Image (tube, rainbow over all chains, first blue to last red; front, side):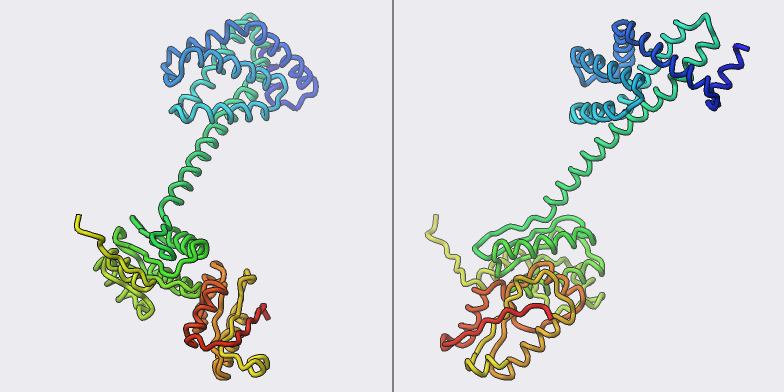
Length: 297
Length: 98
């Protein structure tokens, strides 16, 4: 009789069973509330033993474990993971910059789950059937919590990564003003389709904000370009001309020059000069600047 | 067109700064207008093309083959240079998408 009841509760279709579950959960929560200090200490001890969270001080671990514990019990009680989600996100925001790893976070939550499960074992060891039902109530909730915390942590991590990617992308195509109405765009690294699109966008907006008349695009640092990118470059030059700016391209490597020729890009409209120095000199000439050495130093 | 004759204009500036989008028909009409103006003796400059519009035009493979300048000021300067200061009357026309 006793051994059969966990089976029916697992099916979860029986109404009386749901009632029992509803009664068991508060009992379970009360138990966790009563033994709060002991269980939490057991948990922190296990965390330290497993050498997790080495990036944090013992005081920090204590204060964080207290709030995680309380949150945990609260979720078991209310069944609502939203508060925990918020807390987990907030916590991740604080601990990610300190180098806490995903596996640490997951292990810690699983440790808490184990500590609590074991205390339940101890409490109900005399009544095996009841223990089974208690675990039935506890396990899904506990797993959901572990899931929520892990997902929140990874989400936060990905958000940080996306933010950094954005920053790198911003930095990768600087538009610099070197003289009045003269812009320089040094491009270094791989020029792929996405970067080329971004380059065009930044260049055209740069022309507008700086009221540029001449733009020097220096691609000395670019090893190779493929056909779509080469065509894109030509379009950029055309679009810049529509905005009233002349584009000078400098630092074409021999490989790129050959690609441009074999690809059959319309080069008649491209204004190219060997190196950046020559490009700037030419641009200065176009703008009417004259650079002279003041006196020998 | 009539204005060019009336004012005996030597130059026309079309300011498209207020345009956020331009389709192929719009740019074609602009080009036709510019070419026709030239036939009547007035050089046309299109000014104030927005970055997005500029890229859209080349993306669609349309060529304006018309003089362009960054803004009104630049356009005026260009026309003045072109007519070597002999420009007396200037006609400014705000062409909106047709």
